[in-house]
Image (cartoon, rainbow, N blue to C red; front, side, top):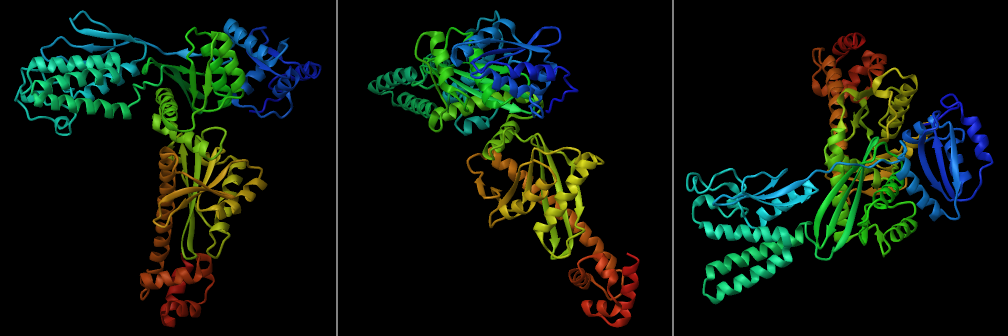
Length: 611
């Protein structure tokens, strides 16, 4: 967003004031016309930083542009170091809570794990405690944590999750699918005594409270005791349960004995909305989760850093390790701030591989799911756009994507299709078709250049809704040759939009994204790969369908002539390429091309002139 002098008449005054500002580190405090503080920031060089807001032609993100348009004046406080400026900034934001700083909106409730008091108890997720004689474990400040623990315990200990009542419904129905695939012990068959079942539930509750390590230790003792008493059937069941717990411990992310005191922070962005999720591990297990909306977005690295400073700057229980899903502008200084805040060592890191990376990815996925409720998209769609943007080096997720494909039959009926994906989904009302007008011979590069030229001429005219948007990303169905042909054309028109090709393998499946100087593999992100494949498949379907209809219409018109069938009509279209060329042909030329006598050719000539 470019803020002009017309949008903020105070800009000349602000520029003049800033030209005399010190180059020392410090904090700046933006105020509106009512002298209300609307933004507080820090800088290692106050003049350079504040100048960046008010310089002519500054192209700000929407949030920053809106803030700058409201600034009437500003104050500043000089500090001895950038670190002191950071500490002061956190203190001032906490005191004044300015509108355009990140304001954390935590959405927390309380959840419980409920163990019913029936003869055959169930382990359930509950939002509140009731006076029903059940045992309640909790409260958990994160519903996510409670739900995951219930799912994991029921799965590992093969407890029933159906709505049947026991023992009332013993043997009244066949065992369900869960029993046949090993997820339920099959209580409904009536073969499991109530005392044995309750013992299994007790073991599951211990698993929830203590984690897999303690459960395995206690079950191993019970298994050895059963074996010594020659109760081999029970020993075998306990052995299988131990194996299930160990297997679950390897796959799930609820317990991790190495994570005694760590948080995992994930940021998800979609348009002008952003959300952060924090997964908290204490004592070797996931103990809580918190979600925060960050309001309007800005640069991701800056949002991530601002969140850390505000969230942990106001907490007493700062963990020893904080794992992030991406970089921040100054990791060392932020780490120093947190260390001084809690008086002990704190480590900030961005994992690149292994189980720590999986957990930061899980935090990011949770942020995406939480954000999806606000923006009306699934978490998978949000993650796909983020991953696609990250793989291609874009500053932000591409919410508005256009994709183009050329379709032709030799040089006959050359056409192109444009499809639009908005926020991860196709918007079919914005699709458009193009008939190639300036290219006579088959030349996909020239056709693509024509189509993009026409598309952006329409953008400047603003006469068609489909062309009134400037896309965040352009895909071409083709390789780097297509990109190198098209990029200079749109650049000459003053359009600054990233252009990439979608490359297929020998089996016509999406393989990679082509840049002008090479290819970017999509195999590192399944979600981005699936989205790119959907886009490429859709544009191919759309353009081929249009080409087929157009070619069919042309050949059927020629077939109106007696003696001209489909095969001869295709010959004519292939020979003359376009309707214009057909109309220019003489009867003799038509007779030669189609292989018909002069009488048929003359009738054909009459039909063509009426087309």
